[in-house]
Length: 312
Image 1 (cartoon, one colour):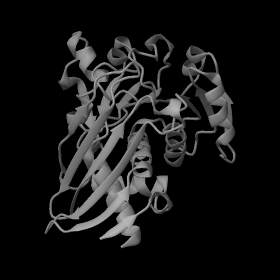
Image 2 (tube, rainbow, N blue to C red):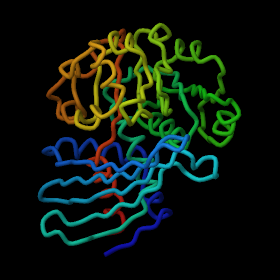
Image 3 (cartoon, rainbow, N blue to C red):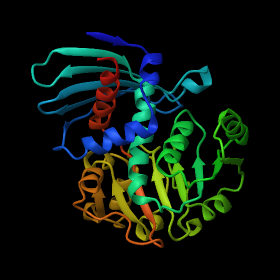
């Protein structure tokens, strides 16, 4: 059994290559997935949690990610999420590898969004706005650029502009202009692609600011009381998800369903259907497309399999 460190896992990952690995994996029969989430009482920072996320691509691989979520960790100069992944042979159950899951999670999440954008974002998109400047933000920016090289301007907004500036200063993106913006509504209106990675309990993006033809990538909300766009945006846009089972656990879908704004039937397609070509993607350049990145153990398994393949 191999032990793959954080440095080794990150060295094995490339945004463009992982997107193509995920695209190919989504053309296979659907993997079996499940989630177990244990939560500690909220101590004022948001509840701490342990997520166990197994998946099984029958006849190939199976595995599980164990991830902790401690919202107060940034105040301790620590990451909010820590994770490990255990990969098994899917035909005989033999353990194959234990690997650090931090880089796996960053790349898996960002490439999930980028794979969706390769179908849903306009091919002539030039302006990407990143809302939120946490640990996921640089990965989301780079993954979107990998599938839409037409993006030549990146705007970064964060509730604290100083953090947005630190992120902007850390990025090295040849040929791409990076701007820190303080007026979110104006930045959203000018955007072709908007990636949102916050833990907002309300719709930080207002429908009235979204221009026709925009693609929204909603990443941050992962509990029923979190969401990143308002109800009107859900009404205006065409909604896509990576996997219904995981997306339906988030406030992004649960809250508008509870309000009567949408039903589960309003989901146009998931990533399996987009990659297999059984459902249409963007119809025209005026359509607003919305992708809810809910994650899912199948994506972790795809990424772990990709890493393991490099060191096999």
